[in-house]
Structure formats: structure tokens, C-alpha cells
Length: 366
Image (cartoon, rainbow, N blue to C red; front, side, top):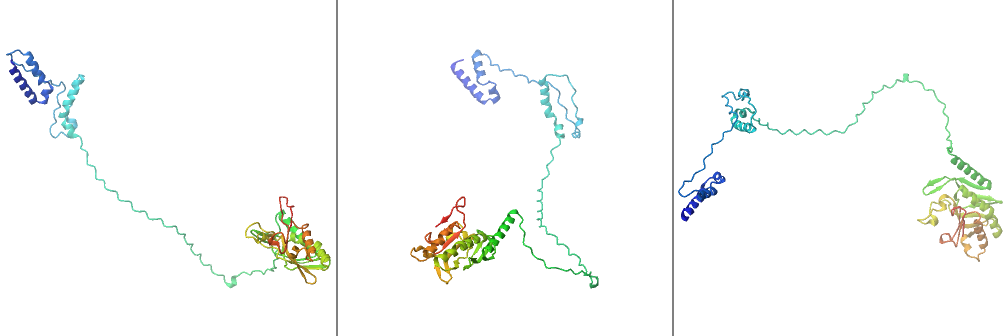
């Protein structure tokens, strides 16, 4: 084979390969087979094509004959193959694959899925009626009871009613009993001292309170009667202390220094619910419990008056008498204030029994 003939055969083989189906190309008939034949076949010999292989038949059971018409509903009518001895697994698999297309009857007899019923929307539940508030049942009116006739009215025996006398409440606790006994003793001592007084109403309202209150009118001692012009209200303990000072000190001092009897004392109201010095803030005053007195004038028997403010003048003729009353007060009261102490007491003496310090024995004497 010359060179030109080889190229022509090569081109024809290439074109033939392009025209062959994919199956031939996969079996390598295109390029490699032609090339091998070109190389091995001697010049002038014929090209032998590879012999076609006979198709192998699958060994297995023969196909199941189709059932006759009318017998598709009865699956039992299909003849079953007879049992054969165990063969190779490949034969069984091949028989199974061939039996599938013939088994049309079995496919026809399989019940077709029934169409699902259309689901209708469930009606919405009716709204529940709102619970009405429970209304209390009105009681049925009781049947009218017939009024008894005048003749049937029973006679009620007349009772001899006596007027009731209200007795004062008795103290319940031992502390209440002790306080009641102390109050009675204090008032008895006032009477023995020659004090004319009237029991006053106790008061208890925040922040003020007064217990065993008495209103003083006059104090009699040494044959003299001293009138308290302001008719002050004190608690009984302070009233007894003040009356004692008047009887023991005021009456004899005024008589000795002025050569005139003491006729009266000009005082404030005694009990006053207020702060100290009348301030809007600060500590509560001793006046708020009836435990203090304010004296602004001395009244003599000839109706003349001496102002307490005169004690600030050392050349005043009443200076010694006024200073004697002021100094003596420090032995009876825990607080003594007057002109020179502060501006609030520039016109009067202030006496009280307020406790000072932790022990309560501390005294303020100014």
C-alpha cells in the first residue's frame, strides 16, 4: 500500500468513525480496529470483520401466560409455576426480570387509589353567649302576717323602771389604778394647801396632751389670798408645785420687800399647744402639757402693779424683790427664764418642770 492509498484509507476510516453510532464507537471499531488491520493485514488480503456474537438467552422459567379475558378480577386463576430445584441466583434474577413485563394481570388487579373526598371546611363554631353577671335573686316577700285583733293582744305587765345612774369607768390595769390614786392624792393636797381650783377636761391630741388637769382660781396662805388673774390650767403636779412656791416664797418675799401684801399674779393661760417660744418649728413647749406658767406682773394689795420687765434695771426700787422671786424659783422648778435670757422672755418669768439631760436633774436658771 503506497502512501496516498494509506492516507485515503485513513480518511475513510475517520469519516466512517464519525458516522458510526455511539455503540460502535464505544466498542472501539473506529480508530483502533482500523489501525490494527492496516498494520497487520498483508497487501492484497481481505479485511475480515469480527463475527457477531449470538445473543445469549436468559435461562430461567418461561413467562407466565396471560390470563384469559374476564379472569382479571380473580387473582387465583393465574397459574403458578411449578417449584424447581434451586438454581443459580443469576437464573432466578433473570427469570424475575422477564416475568415483570408479562405480569400485567397482577397490575390490573391492584385496586386503584380512590380519590380522596373533598374536605369541606368545617363551619366555624358559633360564638358562645357571654356569661351574664349573676343577679342575686330578690327574696320573695314574706306573706303578710295578719295583725292580731285587739281582743287577742296579750297583756304586758307594767315594770317599775328606775333611773339608771352612770358609774365612772373603773381602771382596768394596775398602772391605771396607780395613776387614778395619784391624781386623787394630788387634788387632795391642793385642797389642804388652800388652793381653790376646778377640775378641767383632760386633752389628748398630737402633739399635745394634759392629764389630771385643774384650773386654779386662788391660793390662800398666811391669811392672804392671791388671785391668779389668768385662771391658768395646769396638770395637777405642776399646780401643786407652783401653789407651794406662791405660799412659801412669793407671799412672804413681797410682804417683806414691798411692805404690802401680795394680792394677785398676772399669768398666761398655762396650757397652750405650741412649740417653744412660739416658733413654727422646733421642740414642743412645756406649755403643751400644762407643765409651765408665765408671770408678767405682780399685783399688790393697793391694786398697784409691778412689771417683771423692771428687773432688768438695777436702779429700780422693785429690783431686789423681783430678783428674789427669780432666784428662789430655781429651787422649785427645773427651768427659770426671764428678762436677759432671750428676747422671747424679756417681759415675763417662765417657770416649768421640764426634764433636762439624761438624768433629768439638770436645771436651767437664767
